[in-house]
Length: 423
Image 1: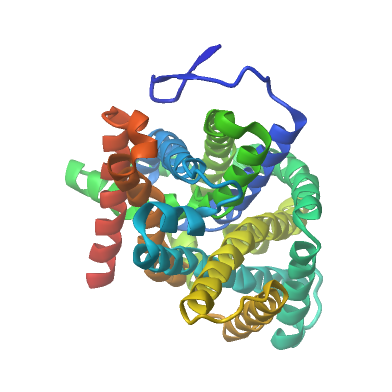
Image 2: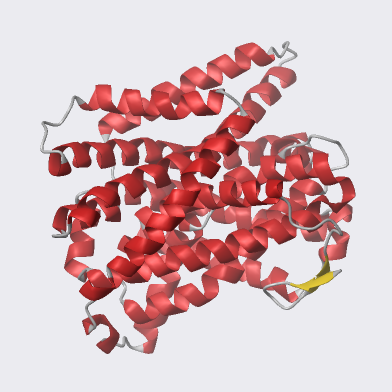
């Protein structure tokens, strides 16, 4: 059977229809991305005004789908069963490039795991103080307990993680839609009247692309997702992945952008700037300034669910990258690789560094812009496109307009980040 993609290309889809397992993966990928999308995107995207946000809503769907599809196809192109992204890079580009890209992959995802350690601590602390009216608990104790609880689920294995994510995502989507609609009466139409000049309009869209890339990014889970599909579907894995990724992207754009528009129209640019200054997710800020008891209590709850579901996918990607770095280093030094010792080292490293950063409490949006953005753009947008034109196994995907679109999006994201850092 044939199906039309988001860019108008026709692709052959696996004969097997949509399964419950596909839904589980779609929700897991959605959960990986939705945390950043609903917590931090309204702040940065909204400060630029309403009409640039409309343009962002139009371009982010194809950007998200095509970039993640390219990364999944890259992972599925391996001739060796069970190869994750760190192995596939080495297989196609050699040991040296394999090491370099594995390190970049780790540093694209690891800062985001740190961000969620800070984010969940601030959200729960704000809820305890502002909604429950209690004294703020010691930060080192609160952050340690929260991070330990999230990591415990990951240590228990992929099956439990997928079940917990599925359990979290359904109520998250339901409350998210309800919250978006609930905020409609408090929308301010002033923003609709402000139409920026063409140069300001395009400049705002360009400089917000890195935050869009980050907010809809579910690449940390794509590697293990593609490995699992290859195990289940063999040669049809990339076709099956295309369908799941397309549905995930549509679900993300629909639910997240509805929420973003609702938040942006409910708050003034000054309030969005204050939320950024306080280092709080938008939902915690809404809970503190909105008179409604529903928003006050459900806002932080949605934020916690979103952070936890997103943490799982990013933690999976970060540990995968770190394991690749450690094992490659041990092998190149002719040392024996003990899986158990490596896993224990990674577990300890992840816990203590996430905990340490959560206690320090750096600026979340500053970390996103400086650390995650450039490398995510390189790994997610540019590397798979480079592979398409260099790797024989990906020859079939050459000469497509969608490739040019992804390359342009990646270049715009990287140049916007560099411009932002220099200015």
